[in-house]
Amino acid sequence: AQTVTQSQPEMSVQEAETVTLSCTYDTSESNYYLFWYKQPPSRQMILVIRQEAYKQQNATENRFSVNFQKAAKSFSLKISDSQLGDTAMYFCAFGYRDDKIIFGKGTRLHILP
Amino acid sequence: EAQVTQNPRYLITVTGKKLTVTCSQNMNHEYMSWYRQDPGLGLRQIYYSMNVEVTDKGDVPEGYKVSRKEKRNFPLILESPSPNQTSLYFCASNLGAGRLNEQYFGPGTRLTVT
Image (cartoon, rainbow over all chains, first blue to last red; front, side):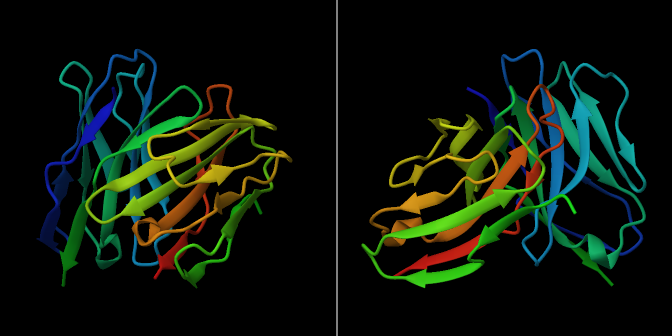
C-alpha cells in the first residue's frame, strides 16, 4: 500500500526566512508523481509544485523548490523568502495510475510578520 | 475558463435525510474523483470514475454512492447521512492517459450532519 508521511504537523517561521517542509512516502510503484498542494483559509486546493518520479532534476517554481531523493523516498518542499501569503496548510501527495492520489496529513505553516 | 464546480458549497442537514452534492467539469476529463478532508487525516479518496458508467471504490466508500451518467458530471450521494460524514468534500478531475499531473480540484463543499 502507498503511504505518505508528513512529520511536521505545524511550523512557524518569520517572514523572509527560508522554510523546509518534510515528506516521505512508501510505494512499490515505479511510475508515479509527487505533489505539494497549498490550502489557504479559502480551502481551495492549489497545486504548488509537481515532480515526475522518472525525472532526476528537482522541480522549481519561483520561490518553491523540492528536494527529491528517490532512493530515500523523500520529497521535501523548500520555500524561499517566505511571505505572509504563504500561510496555509500544505499537503504532500503521491499519485499513480490515472486515478489515485494519496495525501499526507498536512503541515500547517504560519508565516509571522 | 477550465474549472470544476461543486454545489452546494455549504450544507447543514439532519441525520438520515438523503442529499446529493453535484460536481461538474468543463474540460472533457476522463477521470473524476471525490475526496473527504478531515482534520489530522488529510484528504482521503471516496470514489473515482474512469469514464461514463465506470466507477470504483476509493479508500473510504462506506455510506456513499456515486454515478457517472455523463462525462462532465459526477454527483456524490449520501442516502442516509450520519454525523460521522460531517466533513469537507472535494471533487477533482484529470485528463487521464498519464496526465495525473494535471489534476483540477473543485472549491469544496462543507457538509454538517446533525
